[in-house]
Image (tube, rainbow, N blue to C red; front, top):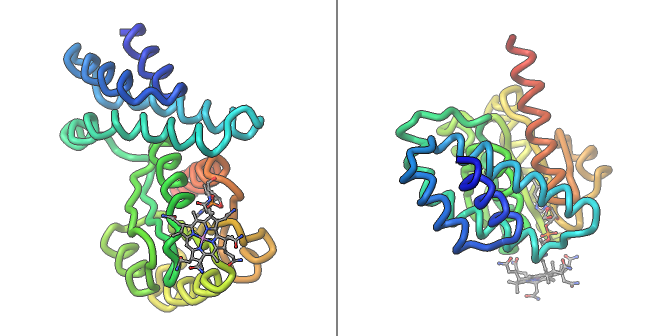
Length: 218
Ligand code: B12
């Protein structure tokens, strides 16, 4: 088993989608449970990619290629995770805000979050307040992640935060924001719970919020 797990780990780390797909299939055939594949190979590999990114050894292209490789394997194990009834760490609704079509960073954040064990409900781009609120309600989400790449569209973030408050959902969800024009100061000003400058730190922050939530419940 270790050999296949290591092959998947290295495949994600090196962004080799074919190797990941073949090795994940091999692992499934060998009856390795889907959650073991996820937790012992793909998640640590994405965490390592995040570490390398923070240390300046990996850049956005390496992250995108690693994420694409992981996605190749995820397609195979997702249905099994559902039948094995593996609980995700928590649920996050993500989207790029209204008027904004930039989705590369948001997708990267989504993949890192998935790599960290969260269930990601991706609303796509150009998402208005109503859609965010509806998705939080229907999915009983723990977190909301909003992305904006334009100085004009980042102004839609407080509108969405207000709509979440008005719907009475603010006590149930933590709101994370990001995108190139954003800063911690802006996140504080609009009442977001967290800001992260990149996908790796976004995933760490999401995991921290979920651990805090779990600790508060116990
Ligand atoms: C690619 C791109 C496009 C593509 C988008 C394709 C796509 N599917 O995404 C296209 C060609 C469509 C495009 C269009 C436009 N673009 Co454009 N685009 C870019 C470009 C070159 C790269 C953006 C990108 O993908 N970066 C790479 C990703 C990985 O980085 P990122 O998005 O910042 O995400 C990281 C972090 O910010 C963070 N993060 C992101 N989201 C989130 C969310 C959360 C919750 C968290 C915690 C973290 C987080 O993590 C991510 C990963 O590490 C930038 C230039 C730049 N240097 O940013 C201009 C840029 C953003 N675009 C710009 C402009 C002006 C436009 C247009 C208005 C151009 C025009 N006149 O039509 C249109 C707007 C269309 C629209 N309505 O959205 C300007 C914005 C200026 C401003 N200050 O507002 C920029 C800065 C270029 C410039 N220097 O002028 N664009």
